[in-house]
Image 1 (cartoon, rainbow, N blue to C red):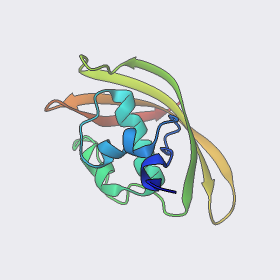
Image 2 (cartoon, helix red, strand yellow; image 1 turned 30 degrees about the vertical axis):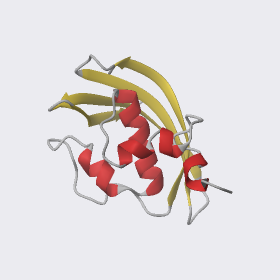
Image 3 (cartoon, rainbow, N blue to C red; image 1 turned 180 degrees about the vertical axis):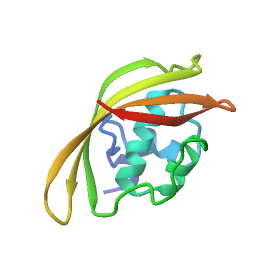
Image 4 (tube, rainbow, N blue to C red; image 1 turned 45 degrees about the horizontal axis):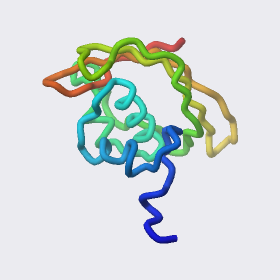
Length: 132
């Protein structure tokens, strides 16, 4: 198929092509909103892009790598709620549910999290999350 990479669906489940959705953010473009950053971080977990996870994690709360678990397949994302985090905001909260599958055991599950984001030097970063 011609242009196959451009029409590959984005792992975040937006329905858009990867190159028009999270791809630019994984490539270094700034996310305009907290929910766009959250979707790109989900995509980075799904693709194993540790560089994007490092760059978008607040340095005060960033753990040591690795940031993702090899063998875990992220199989779906559902945004549950968004509070703030718009283009004119400095803080935002995104509640989401991410489905996963363990490649070794076949076990499946979902992680529900309420994530807090802040602008740092004009760029959205992930600060922390709590299970919800």
